[in-house]
Image (cartoon, rainbow, N blue to C red; front, side, top):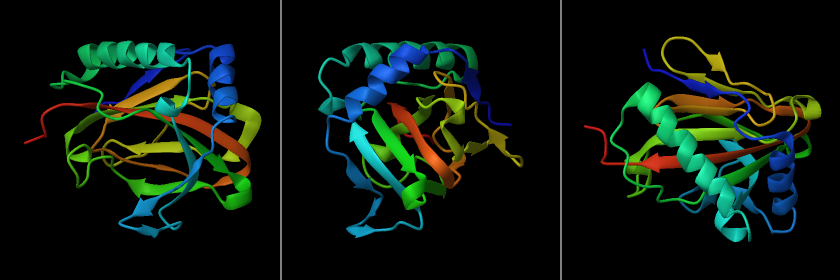
Length: 183
């Protein structure tokens, strides 16, 4: 069975608030592009990349340490780098925000080397309805913690989804640790 690592309290509510406030100052981009076509059946969210935010280097330092510890304790994957900027996704009920079942490994030079996915819950648990992060590590579905500041780490090949947001807005941050492609 595939493991999932749940890390409660990885970030404080104040730190999550700082990140969420910082994304409001940067124009977001509509997601998800499949080839050159927008496919809102697969994903409907707005994205901001951490590289676009000034003064947020401390976030990446914390994410690297969380992935390092999680990999050491749970996965033991050959990790070499963080080749992509973390992305903050906003899933809004007003636009039926969601992300259908998918894995984070795919075509392209970076996606093929994704080994671990880390998702940080930025919103307060009661700030939205729906919008659960569900991970399918085997034949069953696990629901990630909705507690603000919690982190969920799982292999990037594991199927996962964000269920439709029914009210409010869900903010989360995702980063990928990279290494040689799985064989």
